[in-house]
Length: 155
Image (cartoon, rainbow, N blue to C red; front, side, top):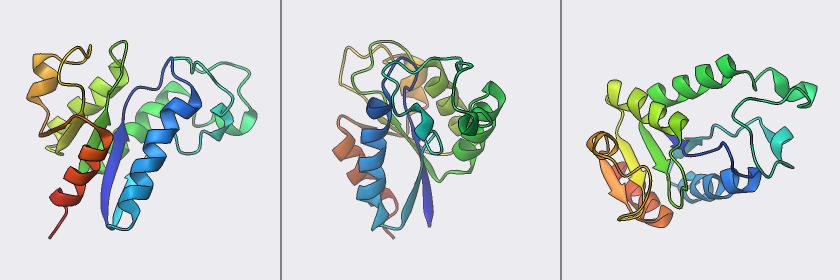
């Protein structure tokens, strides 16, 4: 099975904003023998959040604290990114740059993992030379990105 890591902004967004597109991509690719790895897995304790903080709050439920530390977040996301067969980056609609997503794109590029970037044609704060430079494939909608993933793994 091919693995795709689903990168994109989390800080400042609601749980729903972080998970809806990832769940849709996961479902769309499931029947094409593609496993999607989400940085939101195991974080259901955030389901009431409307503005996910950068630094985990101390009042997070005990069950979530182990995977909510800075080092745990970095360790799992880095492992997922560098061991994926592709990184699917969705920054559509972003209002500010997502530093974590940019780091994940750097990890992918360093390990020569192809990066598929979903981003508007213009006006996105992530639209910079370095971001475009590490992008292997570019889509303008999530649906177009899913079709590109299917084509990439079609053998």
